[in-house]
Length: 98
Image 1: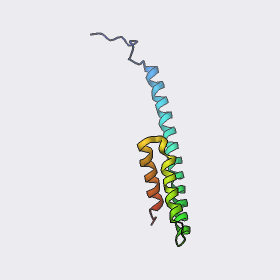
Image 2 (image 1 turned 30 degrees about the vertical axis):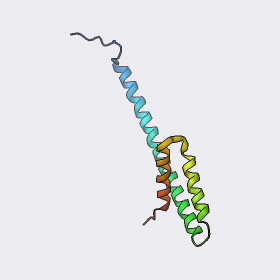
Image 3 (image 1 turned 45 degrees about the vertical axis):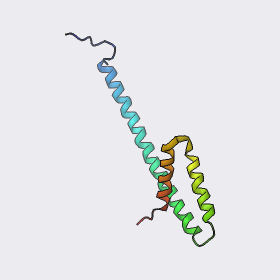
């Protein structure tokens, strides 16, 4: 059986190299975004912990509950995954760092 190298579905060496180079660039961009997300999440968690510490001893529990519901609402457009992400962010804000 003979296979033509220029058959549809079979990439030539040049096309494969170009695809590999593009994939490498795309993966690098994802890594950069992951690093940015991690940094933003850390900053957000610290701010929420500061809010909690500042609000402690005040009558801010209703406001805190309303804000948590607002967080859930801000991630609605992502569907159930957005709800999971919002809940994770809320938990991270409650976690005490050692």
